[in-house]
Length: 92
Image 1 (cartoon, rainbow, N blue to C red):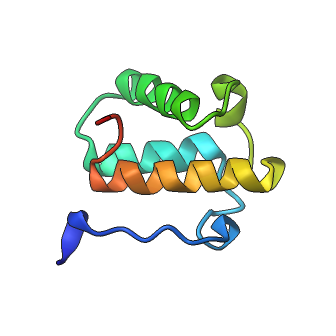
Image 2: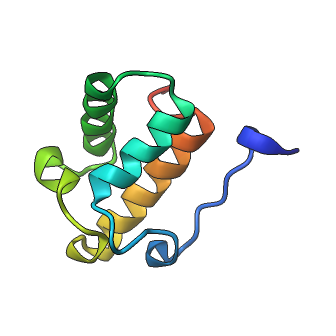
């Protein structure tokens, strides 16, 4: 299988998160490249996705850098980022 049907979620998300980009930028990048939706809708989806993975204060999380997240929060974010890229986010 190739392409958007395959994703890998690494156990140590710090290896796949860009330390110089805020979490919101990294999530938005995936939706912007693969989602075909406007900026406001992307932000709404991102906040919804953060809530789904247990990150309660989504607005605050958007402006945080990866090192500001706990290990568990980084794993939640990384899984969501991969779901965004493969189009499986928000499906269930």
